[in-house]
Each structure stands twice: as C-alpha cells, then as structure tokens.
Image (cartoon, rainbow, N blue to C red; front, top):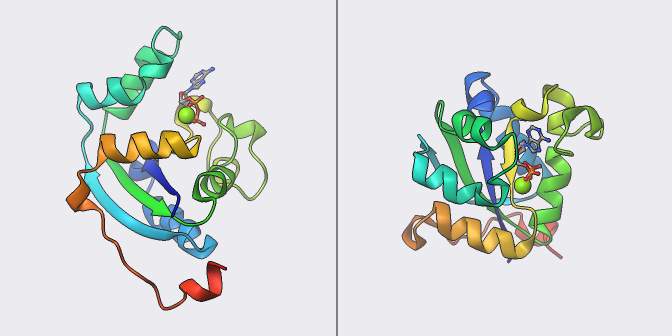
Length: 149
Ligand code: DAT
Ligand code: MG
C-alpha cells in the first residue's frame, strides 16, 4: 500500500488545525499508520529539506520547521501520495485549489501548514527518515473494502 509522510507544521499546530487536517485525511478515506507529536531538531530538519539547500528560503524553512512542535504522521492508501498532495493544495496558498487545506486556511508560501511527500519514492524515503519500523501500525479498518477497491 502506498504511504506518504504528512507533517502538520508549526503554524498548523499553533493555530489549532491538527484536528481539522486529520479529519480531512480520514474523510478522504486514507488510513492512518503512525503519528507522533514532536519537536524537530536541526539534523532532522536539514536532512528532510536537503533538496532545498542553497535556495534563498532555505534558512527560513529550517527556522520555521524547528520553531515549535509538529504533528508527524504516515497515511496510506491507493495513490496516497497524489491524494494527499491534492487535499493539501499547491505549495503557494494563493494557487491552491478552493477546498484544499492550503486554500482554505493559508495565505503565504512560508506558512502553508503542511508537508506531504511529493512522489511514492519520496514517501518511502521520508517514512524511514521520520519513523522507526516499530512505530508503524499495520491494521485493517472495517470500512477498507468500501474505500479500497
Ligand atoms: P511542498 O511543501 O508543496 O512540497 P516544496 O517542496 O517545493 O513545496 O518546498 C518546501 C517548502 O519550502 C514549502 O512548503 C514552502 C517553502 N518554499 C518553497 N518554495 C518557496 C519559495 N519560493 N519561497 C518561500 N518558501 C518556499
Ligand atoms: Mg516538497
């Protein structure tokens, strides 16, 4: 089953949007596999955002993600990566589709509330960066057969 890392970033946590965001992912039909509420250290932040090193927003990105706790989660389902990216909306909130989280709750690219893996292979990499294997819960929902074909 395809898995994706989802982070509710410090702005989402501080603004009390954890429940709202989890609720939208549940409603979409995705299945929660792991969750932890945590502070992000420098090392993890830099590894996670290594691809953006050298960009002019990189230092602010590291400051932002390490500034206050995040809610880190793994969600799974068919096409989980694409589904979650769609539910989050485009990176720049003013370009995000109406009804998406970034459209409905955000204004600025540097305060866009969430992170989600951008491809299945990135999902695999990010899941193992953020979680130990024994933190993942393999389970079946009573509703799975009505959501997963
Ligand atoms: P996404 O979070 O949608 O995967 P990304 O991987 O391109 O977007 O960038 C990671 C984060 O970096 C993004 O959520 C916000 C910040 N960011 C990206 N591009 C930016 C820019 N041009 N100016 C300021 N912040 C930016
Ligand atoms: Mg990204």
